[in-house]
Structures are given as structure tokens and as C-alpha cells.
Image (cartoon, rainbow, N blue to C red; front, side, top):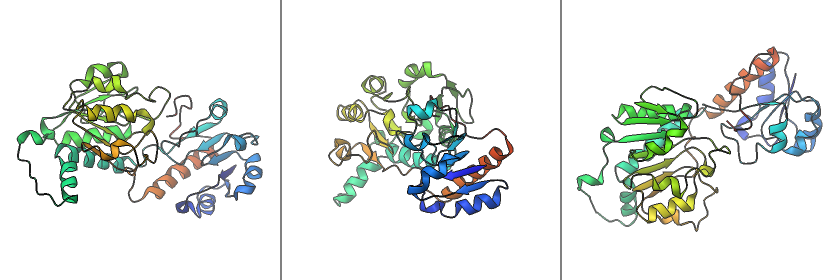
Length: 318
């Protein structure tokens, strides 16, 4: 079996070719220069990384593609790849704890009014707010987690530890620890009006692209906070900004954006009730080793002719 590490590779992946061959008997791994990638892929059985259409076209026996991320970049699932019989796997659940903890940091910042105090700090302004309504106690809040995969489930579990009533909406899952209830996607609209926190973790698929738009936001409570740690293209940023400007939402926190980097002239940068982080929710230790663990497990299974883990429905991209 031959696996090709498609260039360019991350610095953290240096040495993976030799390591994989040592860990998986019967596997040959190539890490070619960009100029040699087509020749290497021509007779490859498997590939790791991003595979452009022009490289897919030269393959003759490719059966498996391992993505480097849980949610690969836009354009990864182009029509020819979706139509190809190869199996795609991803890095699902490798950053669960990091993303969930980042989400809790965003939620706590919003509910305790920290964005305002950070802005005051930049002006050396001492403006304590002792109004009880300035704080939203998590023990009295209802959180709606949209997308209860590995990340959404962990967010719900952590919020439940604060005493939050956690409701979920998911296309596949019907129960999860810490959730008071889980509903199918068809029930989403009915759940929005009761949520103090609306937390989006869904993948970017044809069905979820632009799902958070003006209509969606109009159904939320005016006192609700909105958080997106899933995928940027699921939220129409101009509609979200308009909702914040009109007071249709109390505040929002984003780690992912419809366009990345977020343009410097976008009004969300200067919106006082918005908290923005630059797509870093997955940052944390052990990321490379966790990705390698998924890759080596799938390599062992591939060589042995066994079912792979983290298989993606290419038509849905997750």
C-alpha cells in the first residue's frame, strides 16, 4: 500500500513519513516536493492533505483521502472529489476539549460583561456596573446548542456543570450527557425563542451555509447572546451585525467568519457588544500528536482492509 503526503505539509508533520512506515508494516509513505507530487500520486492507494482537482485527475487507484482538519478549507470538497469513489476521512474530535473550553471562555465573557470592561481598560476608565441585570447567571440561563457532535456535546456537558439548562438540536444525535432535551433539526425555529445563549457548532455543509441570517436572528430573544465556534460560512455576518446594531441581540462572540481574515473595515470589529477571536478555538497542546494518532490508526485499518474511522459523507461534508 502506498500513501502520499500531499505537499505542502505542516512543519509539525515533518518526519511523519518515516514514522508511519515504522508504525504500519506494509505501508510505503512518500512525502514528495510539489514538482513530484503528480508522479507520486499516479500509483498511490491513499493520500493525506488537500488534493486539488488536477492531482486527483492523475491518480489511477486512489481509494482513501485523509483530510488534515476536522473541517477542511472551502473548496476541499469539489464536484470531482465528491463524485470519485474514494473514501474521505477527517480529524473529527481531535480538538474537542480546546474548542469547548474556548467556547466557555466566550460565554463567560459575554455573560459577565467582560467586553465592556476590556474596552474601558484601553481607556483607563473605571466604570463598575453593579446593576444586577448587567450579569446573566449561567445557573438561571437556557443554552441552545445547535450541532451536538463531539464539540457541541462537550460544550453542553460543561455548561450543565454551571447549572445551565442545555437544549440541543442535531441532525443525528438523540441524547447526550448534561442535555435536558435534544431535538431534531426541524424543531430549531421553535427552540430559538426560549434560549438565552445560542451556540452554533455545526459543520459547513450545503444545508448549513448561511443558516444564521436575518430570519434566524429575528426569532432569537432580544436578550440572547449568540456564539459561533463551528464554521464561518454558516453565519451571514452583515445580518448579524445589523441585529447587534438594532439591539435585536444582547451580544455575540465569534471565532469563525464568513470571510477570513475578517476585513479590517468590517463594522463587527468596532461593535461594542461583539467579542471576536481569530479562529483560534482549536489552539492548544498535543494537536499534532492527536492528528497523527488518527492518521496512524486509519493507516493500520487501511492496510488490514478494515473500516476506517471518521468517515465523511462527501455530499454533506461531515
